[in-house]
Length: 485
Image (cartoon, rainbow, N blue to C red; front, side, top):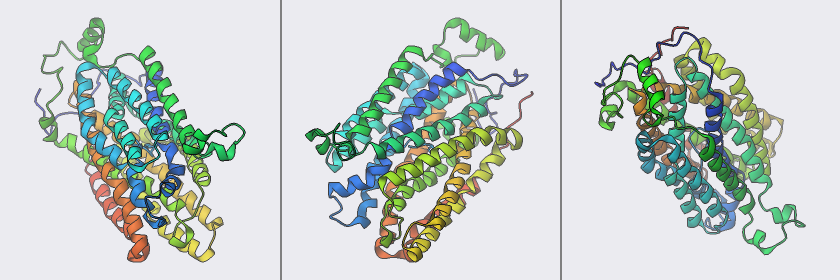
């Protein structure tokens, strides 16, 4: 099959109306997806406190950002968005960048389900190791293990692309931010609430174990949920890879496509060919830059909220940060549920993406404004909470971009037999961006505060430059053809 810049996106010209969503299989796929923010974002409320307790900063709170970007390594790609987390950083994504394409490519040959099971097992083991680690590098190693074994994000997007068509694909992908938002609303709440249970519930957690491992309880909760998802997936999720379906189902699919495809048509397209295809690389580049900017914000928000007021942060407690993130998760989930699919149907994928990325600009503006206000008021008052609301509302608008970019990436695949490779390529790109993002932005935040560069705002200037690049790339996306209804 020849692939070049004129290769059409995945089409389903047979659709005469909106195909109903495959509720059971989609629900099982989203359950696996739910384990991603659950296994990632629960550490955000207490990570800065954990860094402080480890003593690696030498008592200098301004250096916490240098280390937080390395340890906070379980956020998956969306997160928003959640995205993604929840979600959802640095070394996790280094490991994921080195293996994501391999796992996704492998799923094009052995099937999606086996790869998902390996990823879920890795998440469960990683969370247990994280809770039982009391030194810096073992914490980092546990997140690297999760990244190396976890190729689930790209594989799950491939499954959704295979069980949907062009009439319901956007609706299915619009559910991803909602799932991440729900996970993001739950994980930080129990992450902050269950941390140090020997202090909060001494009558139940009075043993020496809970003193030595004060953050094990939220870790084991996440590990158990990943294990639960593993067994549900093993028992009920059906294989979606066309070449692995039963012969009769595959013959029916080939017949619907107009005959029996040749072996070349049903084989994954070579990676080098994809890399030379303009219609493939434009959505991939947009996804990468979107992931880089978003992970930068997601790393900066809890760090900024936890930074002492005298240094320019808000000085919030881990529990307060958890409540903020939980409130955002609930509100964001409702926002995505009410507006994303409707906006895509009314305005189209390209317009929604182009407008959504512009919402990054007010988020950038709120950081220095909050620093200025807190220096004047010396406390977190009404003005600060209004700015936090503006920041979170803008973030909810941004999360709409993820549902859209997933559609662009999926429909850029030359055929459904290359969906794993296509999603693996895009996942590798965004993983590389996310690997650089957290350590870069948190370190630059700490560096800006320590040396008062541009009034401590140098990190926000870099974000603005990246945002301009993202806006430029978003205008290069094609208009997706409307299917016949």
